[in-house]
Amino acid sequence: MHYKNGREAKEGDPVVYADYNKKVLVGQVHSLNVGATSCNCQIAVVIPGGVMQTCETLDHLYHAEDALLAIDPLALEPKKV
Image: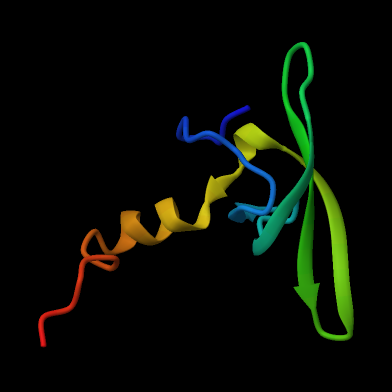
């Protein structure tokens, strides 16, 4: 089970994805399911007033850490004091 960029998916991973309305969402992966042609999961997304549960195919998602590093490659480097 892997994300769009090939990184292995694990329970509890933070993910970034675009929903069917092209709205960018951030959530946490749970309930991973291996399928014959694709792997699916549930995503918990915090919204005002509660939590929204969605179902997505893993190859439509990016791990949040990979998305951050694509924007700022040095974001996780130790800071010099």
